Amino acid sequence: MAGKPVLHYFDGRGRMEPIRWLLAAAGVEFEEKYLKTRDDLAMLRNDGSLMFDQVPMVEIDGMKLVQTKAILNYIASKYNLYGKDMKERAIIDMYVEGVADLEIMVLYYPHMPPGEKDAALTTIKDKARNRYFPAYEKVLKSHGQDYLVGNRLSRADIALVELLYHVEELDPTIMANFPLLKALRTRVSKLPTVKKFLQPGSQRKPFDDEKCVESAKKIFS
Image (cartoon, rainbow, N blue to C red):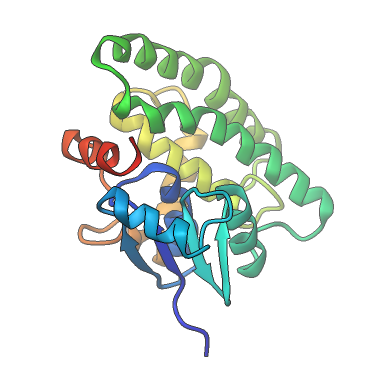
């Protein structure tokens, strides 16, 4: 029996958080080894674990996978969260890439210089309300099904629900005009594996606070 996946990253959201969400939604238990210093990162680089000298890195099924998209693709394929055929997979990829475009702005927001945060937050809210959320609301309205693609849970639903939670932390009113997105979030959040992940004490990471930001700087700067 293969061991649990092992996630190598710092103790914060960053680019590892979508991987945590996807594993958790798939019902996969995983372990984490946190980087705490530059030396910890150097050790992984020096022993050849990081193909491009970067984390996230996930040890899974005898591999040391890097590059977030590659890791997510593998997990989604392995745990049947990637559609039933090539067409569905292409649509799922399109939806996930849209999520990623906004998620990357949310990801970097806590790590930005204080003088740039107000403008960044305004941009995030504008793009959420006027570009990304309306697009996904339209998809759900167009087919009237429970999930984004093929009327079954996929990585696209998980990625979008993660994003909804993250953006709502920045603006609790952001979803007021998107009833179908709110319904999707509720539906996915009630799935037993996701419900467990959303409970206090899980491996889900909180919003990156100042302590987390400083910790990341010590490792990566």
